[in-house]
Length: 339
Picture 1: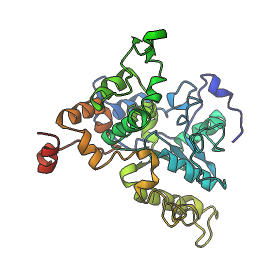
Picture 2: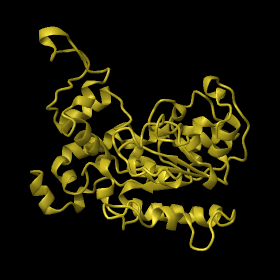
Picture 3: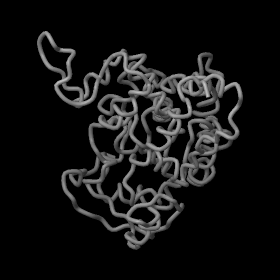
C-alpha cells in the first residue's frame, strides 16, 4: 500500500488479465440477463475507473478492505455483520484493541488502521479486482432481514435521529420545525409500513439494494460469498481456503499456525471461547432482525412489497436468496399476522 493513488482523481484506465464469468443471472437489463450483457459488453476485461461507484472515498463501506498478504478483498455491506468483519481484519493486522466497538472503531477508515483498495495505485487495484489469484468476498444478507434490521436500528432504537439528519428530511425552521419543507416524512414514530416509501425516497447504504454495492462490470469477479445467515460456516470455509491456497504455499503458515487457528477458531464471544460469527449475539448490528422479529413485522402485504422492492437482489443467482413461499407458511404465523 501507500502507492500513488492519484488515479482516484482521474478517469484513467489500466489493462488487465483474462476475463472470466463466474456466475449467471436472470436479472433483466435492457432485455438481456445482466451478467450476459456484462460478458458481451466486457469481452475485454472489466477495467477500473475513478468513477466506479464502489471506489467512493469517505464511505465507511466504500472501497473493499485489502489483506494483501493473504490476497483477500473484502466487500463489507452495512447491516451485514460488517462490525465483526472489521474486527477480524484488525485482529489479523495485530491491533490490540481489535475488539473495540465504540461507533468509530472499527468502522472509520481514518482511524481504524485498515488498508483499503483506494490506498493502492490503479495498476495494483486492477490486479486485485481481476486476478484469479485473489479472493474477492462479498458479504450479503436476506433482504427482508436486512431491511428490518435497518428499520430497527435507524428508526426504532435510534429514535429516528439518524434519518432526521438526512438531506431528504428538510424541516422548516422556527415554531413549525416539525413540519416538512419538502421530502418524505421523517417522523420519530415512523411505522415499518411507512419505512418502505421513505427508503425509496431517501437512499442510504444501510438499506439500499445489495446488488448496488458493486458496479455491474465487476460482479463476475466476485468469487466468494458469505451469507450472514451462515456466516460462521462460510467464514470458516473462506479462511481455510486462504490457508490452503495462499498461506501454506507461501509459507506464511507453518504446522498448526494457520490463519484460522490464530484468528478465527477462538477468541470471540463474551468468554473468548467462540469462533468468529459463531453466535448471532456477536453480530451486534444484526439488530435482532431475524426469526420472531421477521414474523412480527412481515405480513403478506409487507412481504410482497419488500420482496418486490428488492427484486434485483432476489433474482441475482449469485446471492441465492429465497422469496417467501406462502404455501409452506405455518398456521401459527398466519394467525400471528391475521391472515
